[in-house]
Figure 1: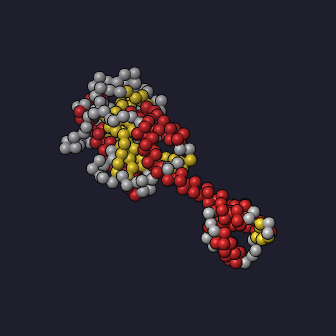
Figure 2: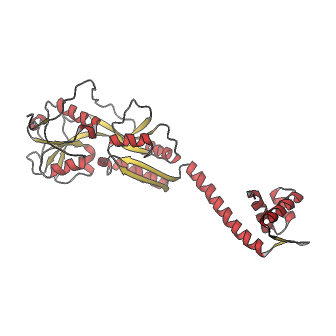
Figure 3: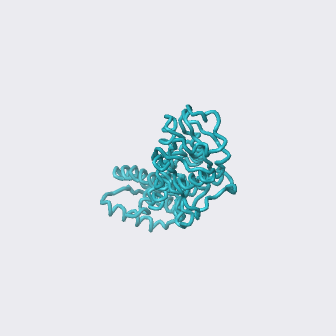
Amino acid sequence: MELRHLRYFRAVAHCGGIAKAARELLVAQPALTRQLRALEDELGVALLIRSARGVSLTAAGHQFIADTERLFEDLDSACKRARQVARGQTGSLRIGIAPNYTWHPTILALLRHFRIACPDVSVMLDPELSARQVESIRSGRIDAGFLAWRPKDDRVFDGLTVFSNRLLLAVPATSPYAEAPPQRLKTLRDEPFIWFPRDRAPGYYDFLIHQCHAAGFTPNLVQSAADVSTILGLVAAGMGYSLVSEASKFNGPAQAILHSHPELSATYDVELVWRSDNRMPALTNFIAMLRQHGPGPPEPQDSVNPSVPIEGPRTERQA
């Protein structure tokens, strides 16, 4: 049994006659008659009652046309969904996001625009540090990610700038610097500093260290934490100070006071990153939405010289 047999039977049932159905189908009447006979033979039942006035349906024919109509409705829906997927209008996207950026207004606005444009595409955000996102994108576990410090020399990846970040000084609300930061950051050289292990985010770690060196000091590391949220929690608890991403002002605790500082002038890009060979239509639409609503080309910015040796923060035992 082929789909054309069902189409032929459907047309005859709707037209009430073989001759009229043959004209609508642009099929010779004898050929249409043979196909109907073949369908009945395969089913082993009579579907049509033939008479000089046309054809009518048997009881089996009535049941078969009802079931056939449902099949064609499902087929039409399947065709529609296939076209929607091909246009990126339905399906799903799994996108990683560094936890510190989950409340950033630029990302929230992008997600809102995409939701309006493609309401049938399910977007799942997967909080994950940037370094881990790179491997998840490489393996295909996620389709794209909002992250910083992608390996720019790796042609597996492509990316588009979402926004640029600078560093902020984070101090406890009880700190003497809560109202205003020190004029020079090196004033804090002996104050307890909260940071994170370098293997958690090597590029970000080195960027922060270079900022400290440029300001003329090496921070006094007394405690480390796994992520920015924990760091800010420790700062809020009065355990020390830290340097954090500008994005932290959108989701940091009120007891951690964030200051901009002229010695923290360098910026780095947060990008949407994806595999350059990923041709998912929904992802293509998401990238197009970012191009339409995202920032323009990034401004020239200070860069970290990779040839400069990295000296990590000194611990209390080193101080």
